[in-house]
Amino acid sequence: MTYAARMLDTHPVEITVDRKQLADAIDALTSCSQACTACADACLGESAEALPGLARCIRDNLDCADICDTTARVLSRRTGDDPAVGRAQLEGAVRALKRCGDSCAEHRDAHEHCAVCEQACRDTERIVQELLSGIGLSR
Image (cartoon, one colour):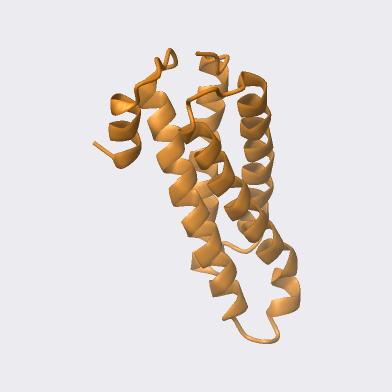
């Protein structure tokens, strides 16, 4: 059991959404944030000749990392949550995950770190979409 799942299980506020699905999304978003941060750093470590072609990928990695991290934090706060804010945050995360996955896909054949990051983005996008489809984020 992950820390996200344990925290949701011990939270004193009633949580009416599927706890496993919520915990899976929090865990995936946190993990993807790390993958995107590492991919941006790996891109910066590539040759000077490769850097101009990686600029958009680096930007998308950093944006996605920040958005995933923030979304995981918002989803972790259950006391007095606003379902509309949660939904908007998840929708923004889906857009960032898609864009970053698409950027990394352009470089996956030349840079293995981009292939790993693309997979992290695609997997997380699917998990977040499932959460969005299954809940109204209301308590």
